[in-house]
Image (cartoon, rainbow, N blue to C red; front, side, top):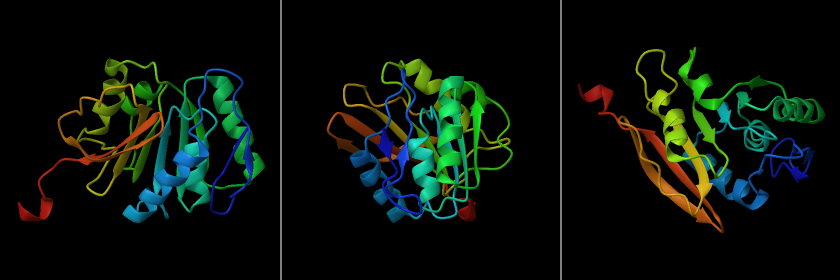
Length: 193
């Protein structure tokens, strides 16, 4: 079991799938969301949580005021746990999708999101990470806009990802065995053109 750290559902426990998931620790979530709130990207945000597992990251965002959260995981058992956690917390504006992360982001965005949370299994190779990052930078039916933030969580033993053209890392932080990279679109200022 893990719990929501802060916000409307702060202190409430989350169920975790029995196998195949590694929820982000409460300590890391607390530090991560403190930084994201400092960046001003949580309150009212549209959030995409890829490799959701228990939904801990996306539900933390919802608890802290995100307006809309989509929890995506390829394992039906994980999305069932996410759905159970959403019901138990009574948080509105959260939906779950059973799909591979790379397949989901290759599909239609509909509208840009403010925050993308990517916490893949630590054994996902660099090609797998790139398959998720690459579609986020597309210009047609975009997932991101200039103010969007992408968060990638990996093991400290994992190399920094090869960021796709159009995306750049602007910060990173290490918490014990966890490394978190913060990225954004790398585009010239639209107003100066």
